[in-house]
Image 1 (cartoon, rainbow, N blue to C red):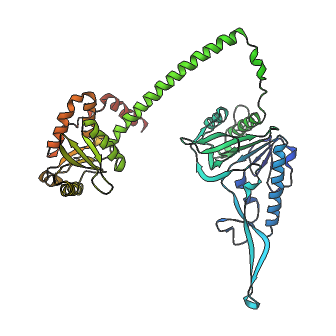
Image 2: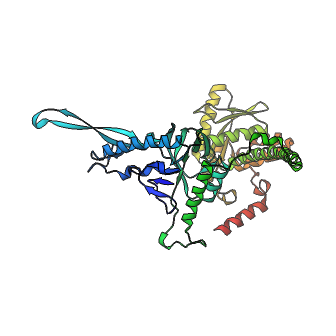
Image 3: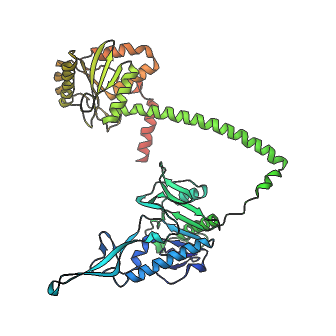
Length: 464
């Protein structure tokens, strides 16, 4: 194996720079880290960068362009010979080089010479085409079982530096929770391989010299690299597969095992469907917890669903107007929804009154005002000991007939209706008739399982 601009503590690998004259053709596998390559060339004195990219010096620019052309041809022929090129991917590695051309303006003392430079992408040396964009992170999910083993075993060492928007071959890994590819592999018809990997960074070791040796006499760093190199070799030269015609020659136990596998697969599919169904139910259940955690449009959406469960007709308000309009048995109300880090305020009630006035002008009928506030939203429910609606704001709301409800109270009402739909009319009537704060519906033990809350609290204390 040959490593270009990637230096590890591994004796089975020969280490050289991209710029060195050593040929790749003496090797079966070449590993290259293009991010390190520009640093091996000298920069322009007093001007290390030009337009944000590394400025290769005028003396080094011809050497750089020659090396780039040479390696590009080598990499292409190397893979066509059936060998393996491994690249730790990065976004476009652009450098600025001197072209050797000059432009002259002015004469005499005013004569000015401008040296012409151009931008060059180091990744043009790759024997494959693609589009690689910047993106750095550590959340990587495997799309290949063996690579998944390496990701899991050395999770602290993998870091992606580029998103492969267009790439040859099949994906090996993506950004977790997305379809954004960060690793891929392609083989040609001669078993040549180009393997595009995230970066395999150095582990965080406080004192490398003092690192303890393992039982085999090597360091943990050596084992990590050996494991990676072993996987690369296996990926390049997989074990020989059986020919297709061998499927016509089965043992008795093969047939029995095949039927067992078929039955297990059938059961697995049924279990996966049941698991997906339960996960969907859990997600819907978790959404109701937004009533005591969320703010903004997310909270407004969940409050609208809550009023629908209670039996109201719900209409979302226009942008810049009332959050919601609700109707029950011919009675109308406008709803203002707020998620706040502290208690509600007169400002929230004043906003509600503004919507009520506009609705009165628009329809000719004064609506009921309902203020739903998720107060103290950043605190767990059992720590919300301060009132959601302080005394100083109550006279304003009471004088205008407002009904004041917390997100937790609305959640309790929803759960009661889901448990016993016959409660709906009584709950809707209480909302439309209440002036001031709603009484009741704030017993946490009626909403949550008290024992589980206690166990969670003990677990949190133990962790601290």
